[in-house]
Length: 475
Image (cartoon, rainbow, N blue to C red; front, side):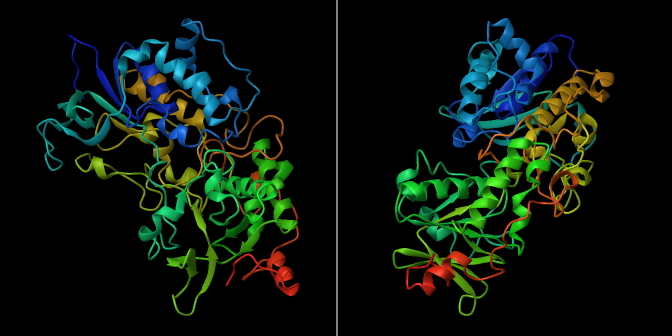
C-alpha cells in the first residue's frame, strides 16, 4: 500500500449506506482522506428502497460511534436508544444529517456508479511491486467517466441491488426475465407506495426469510382492507414452521414477535401455503402469471397476478475483475468468515466480532465490509458492520493493535439479542435478523402451530373449494 509523508492517505469507500458512511467517519478521525462513491442520487440509496420497514434492532445498535461523535459536534440530538427506527427514520434522523451537517459532506460523490477497480499500471497477472501501486477506481456520473486514485479501498456496496432469482437452482426461472413487469424483488411497500399494484389481486410470495414473512403479513393486512386480495406463500422447503422462528425465546424480541404473528396468520388460514414448491418456470397465461414447479408439462403450478421474489441477495463482483480476491466457494464471502455465517452449519448463535484480519483479501489494502462481506449469507447486524470498518480503518492507518482489538459491545451474542418485544413488526432482511435454525432461534424450539398441508393447496383453499367457492389459485 502506498505510503506518502506529503499527503494523507486516500481511502475510496464504495457505497454511501450506513456502513460506508461509518467507514468515512473513522477515516476522518484517523487523519486520512475519505472519498465516498454512492451510486444513487443521495446517500442511503438502498435504504430508501425499504424505507417503510422497521429494523429488528433499536437505535442503540443502529448508530456508529465515530459517526455519532461527528454528529454531536454538529449539534445533533440522538433519538431514544430503545426505539426501533424504520428505514425512513434511519435516513431522516441519522444518515442524512451525517451526510449534510458534518465534515463528511465534503467527501461524498453521489450519482457515482463504480465501474471498475484495479491497480495503477498493473493488470491482475502482474505481481512484482503491485502492493505499492495505488488503486485506480473508475466510476460513471452525469459528466461521464471519472477516475480517482486511492491508497486503500473499502467495498461497502451491499447486496440489495443484486437479488437472487426465483429459480430454485439459483438461476433465473425459465421465462422470469420476460415477465419482469409482474415481478418484484426484496420487500415491496405493499401498504404504501405500491398499494395500488397489489390491492384486489392474487399475490404469490416466494421465500422463507424475514423479507418474505414481512411481505406476507402486510399482504394479509391489505386483504383485510381491499376485498379480492389473495395471498399465496410459495415455500421451497417442506417445513413451514421453520420460518416461524423462536417466538418468545428469540433474543431479538422484535424478530420473535414477527415469527409468532406470522405463525398465527398461517394457522388461521389467512395465507395459502404451497410447500415443496421449487419454482422452475414463470410464464404468462392470459392476464395471469403461471408459476410452475417441476417440468412445464407435468409439474405443479399456481396462478397469480403478481409474484414477489424474496429469496435473498448475492454480491456483485463484476466490477472487481482486476482485483485479486479470495472467496468462500459457497457463501462468496471472505474464507475466514464463512464458517461463522454459513446457514448450512450456522444457526443464530455467536458470530464473534471480526475485522481487518478476517476481511483482508490477497489484494493488500482492499476490504469488503457491511452486508457484502457476508456474501450470500442471509443475515447481518448493522453494528457488526460498524465494528468491521473501525478495525479495517485502524489497519489502513497502521494501528495494528487497534485493528486486532475487539471493541464491539453487544448483549451476549450480538445476533440473538435485543430489548422488549414489538408485536407484528416488519423487518428488513439482513439488518438485524438471523436465519432460523431447525430447533428455533438460540436453541429453543419453534412455536407450535397447526401445520399446513404438506404439499398442494393450503387447508383454507381446500375448504373453499369444498364449499364451491373460488380457491387461492393453486393448481
